[in-house]
Length: 212
Image (cartoon, rainbow, N blue to C red):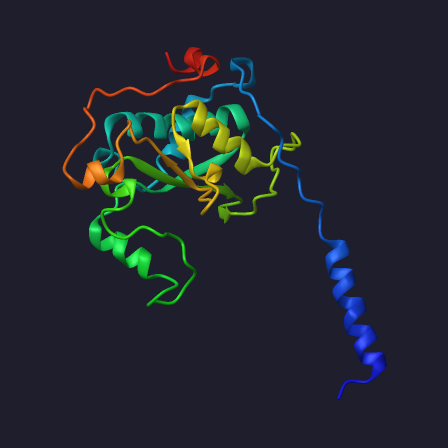
């Protein structure tokens, strides 16, 4: 049985741990992007781009194009390095991911079985922040020190590029996820309907001068 002194000591350690944690960076209403925020360094952008190991050719052409722009502008506009960690995902890969945290070890990372994810149709990508060559999934990270959480900035950049950002989802927020559905539901995709290769998506006016 623990003595009162030991209990007091443990409580003190616990309180000290919580009080010593850094204050979370508050998420702001709507971060905005302006062209003058961006100093393009194409050579460094190209170097960062090669570190994403996904197969861009398996993606819808616009998803691939905007995914590449996402990596480039994250560096030149936000001073952040991101890598795409997942693009097209086969049925086997999707089911293996769905099993994680259920029938297999690990945390639950998706509610989608094979055929139920936009990844299965080349319409989605996942990304991660890289800092000092390590992944950073801390939602409060503010590496570029502009008082806006990096994950929120990246989500807004993705939306400015025409993506839907999983971080906006209420039921199962998926912060590393970007997708373009081109108006098609999963049911329609399962039934065999596909977006045209020439499909377009909105692009924020502030980004147009950077991508011309």
